[in-house]
Image (cartoon, rainbow, N blue to C red):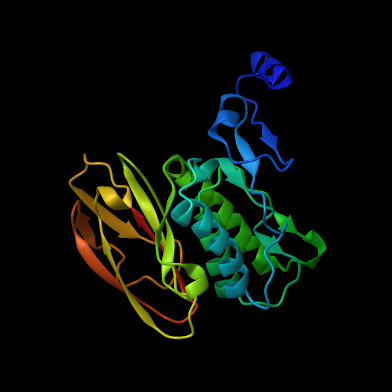
Length: 234
């Protein structure tokens, strides 16, 4: 603790991360900025991107929804997003990447094998990191919404401030599903703005782009099997 205080005395802007398996106690946040998530693999395993997401997001669900752990999601980091080989389409990589990033961590660790990445992989990765930079102000209030990923329920993450926010949605099942949302305090909205215009960094949300919603609005998302959608509200 004395070392951390000394670091902040020398430079209050230094970002301190501990990855020693520390329990997720908010007490740590008096001294550091992020803690590695314990009781989880270094890089989410699975035979495809959906299984990788469900593995990690299932642990998030257990930790914050079931156990109601009192620790901010944006102060947790994982050894992800993972990219150790090329060959998947830019669209598939983008959906995995944005869903991963939408968890809202303030510390993104890239678990990648740089020699294996194609030019399109680098392009997707660059756009994802640019999005993180723009969405970072929302991450302070990041939270999960929806059902249990391990039960193939639609779920996602969301974060808001007085200027806007974002919602990510993932359908981990092999069947199309319809997911209903209400833009209210329960979802994390902060009263202040009357109207929000929707956009998306991905190419699969054209039906919502430029739509205008207000606090209290209800809408439905028809989401394909294993699809990820990202909606931004500004």
